[in-house]
Length: 252
Length: 89
Image (cartoon, rainbow over all chains, first blue to last red; front, side, top):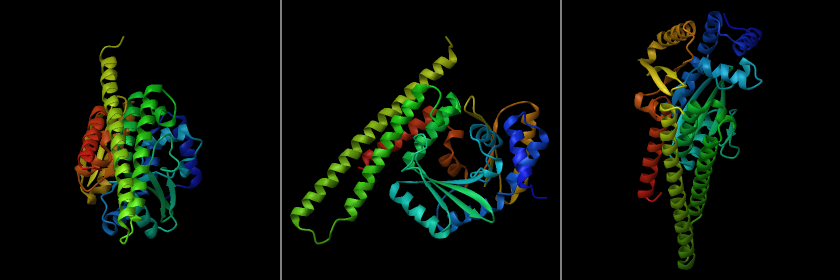
């Protein structure tokens, strides 16, 4: 029997309050299973029609649901990412292509472009798709955005999940903020580069060709410099992970 | 393929990984519930999650956090950036 909205709301309140009861875990499991079919449908579209390699999480973990209920003033039935899938693509151009492809197949989808409005430095494109009265969140990340998100998630595991929401220890947040800024600047220059190359006219004069090629070369050099900056911040993560491990092994 | 993962957030270590064929979704979902109930009885706060990917390699690519340490994630980032620099991107 389907769970009513009021049952779902009450379940969410009990989960938020804790401790977790066996009957509540069973009811939550029943609710999560109701997302299986829609999750499979979206996966099929991404895989078979768009030739992508998505990973699906047909239902959020209990721990993640409880965390979200406790962190936000939200009802269980309002959580939009119970079911989700993730696609990692090479760069911004590919991210835009995939976004357009998804919108062509799900015209009523809602886009949360976190490249324009990052959530605590997290950058990606999230799309909420509705099918058979169920919502599925599709995350499209470029390789650098995904690298940042993986670092952030791992840091949150070690130093507390509040780090992902602008709280907690300062140095992990500072390092994540720096890294996200570098990734954003690299991607901004990549967009500029794409626009510049797209605007190259086949019948351009020798002089304009020389100028445009010069601009492209400058952009390429700027991107290289930023990649070197990114390497430095990644090395800082490694150094910090060593010192954190040492603190863990030999507490003062 | 469907993968059932048990992950300890506090230590950042993957404690269990089982795989199921796509046709065995109900079996995988039951295994998830059984594991959650068992952990709850033992008062262990582990994350239990079902993920679907073409294969384990695809899963590791999109959900590396469950498989790699912070150092390994950063080293992977360094390698891909060095490659991009070599290729002139």
